[in-house]
Image (tube, rainbow, N blue to C red; front, side, top):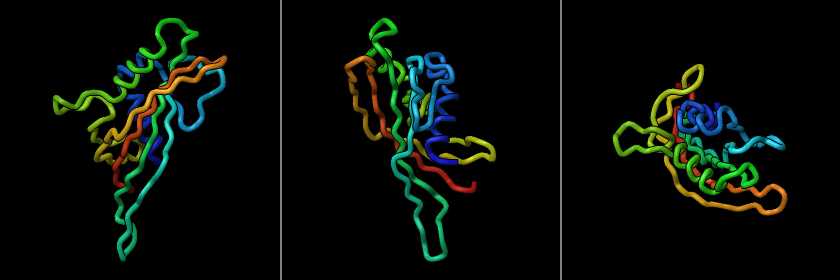
Length: 148
């Protein structure tokens, strides 16, 4: 399993996210004429440390998550994108992370043990022209155990 599919699986398990996008969480390619709001996930970088006997087994990857909204669907598209990004990021102040940030657990079949998801940056962007899209980009570090 790759980091982008791990993050997609986790996003689809967050009720606040699925309430806004249903299953419109895509890896790498956002479909043409996709209903908004939607999410696109892509792995940017991956590091698998080695020692003299081979791979350590722990992987750290940088994953970009893009939250899209469109002003043409009505309402304030920027507010919608912000709400979606906030739902995905979640709150970990209680010690029980509700979103991506701080989440630990097992995902997929066979289960992959995710040790940490950490937000490292957030950037808003507006695409003018016919799309009239608003996008919030968040970068996360995902740390997981390969083959566990």
